Amino acid sequence: MFEFTSGLIAMGFLVAGLVFLRYWRRTRDGLFAAFAAAFALLSLNQTLLAFSRVPLEERSPLYLLRLAAFAIIIAAILAKNVSGPRR
Image (cartoon, rainbow, N blue to C red; front, top):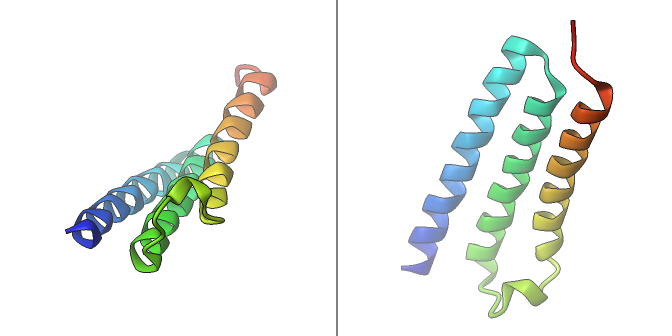
């Protein structure tokens, strides 16, 4: 059952990443590209967790993928706020 729900979660992350990728292709806004990359990393993280059967995911090196995804999101939001409004 764990593998099934992990697969569903990974698919949800991947679908969200593809939606953001579509918005990025339409607008060329870097924030959408960053969110697409972050959700792709989250999907990869969830997939690897399902196949590796790590007992405590917060103590595994796979946790660094999740950390990288959130760091990308934070950096993209900060970069968007620093750049100011576009005219």
